[in-house]
Length: 77
Image (cartoon, rainbow, N blue to C red; front, side, top):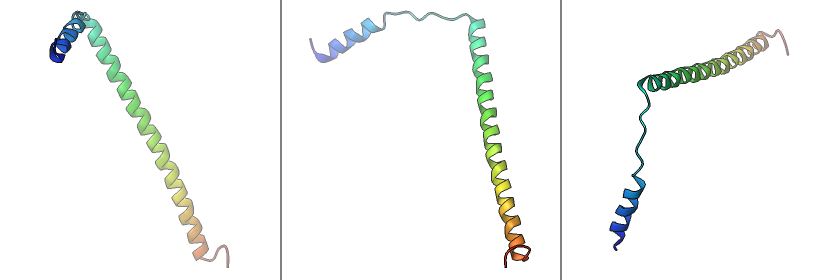
């Protein structure tokens, strides 16, 4: 028996299982749950990004205010 015929025999034995079809209502529910979870994940990502940018803007604003105070000689020499 050649290698190719052995592989074919092994494949045909592995494919003998018959897939079970899910009812249409169950497929719709699974699809809906996937869409909801994906939307929630995107919203969480946007919230995280917004928080990061908010703190970065606050930090830059504080640095600019400190620099302006230093240049106008309100603090320092």
